Length: 110
Image (cartoon, rainbow, N blue to C red):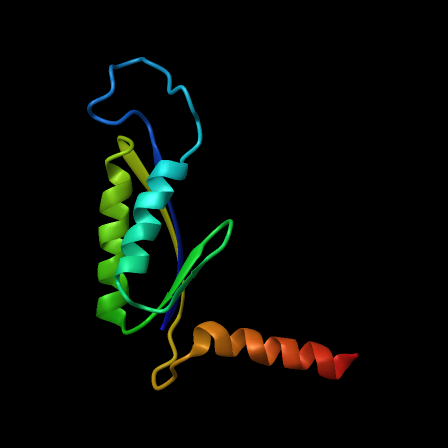
């Protein structure tokens, strides 16, 4: 399966003083914690400006997403998680294979 996900915190972390605004509205530290977990998983993956995509079997992919989501949860009182999956049993290498076929189709259309 290919699974693309985006995860981001909102609200104040439990350790932050109530009502104190964040000095930096960016979520890059939280996203970095999530992407680090993905990369350390050893599963094929790719991160772009909006999503991180992971390739693997159902249980291993969702385990990584769960751990990444839990890591992001430390940065806020809530977590937003968006998931899109392409479930195609028997196929591997689709993280790059789908893009290669697209590029070939574009070349053929020229």
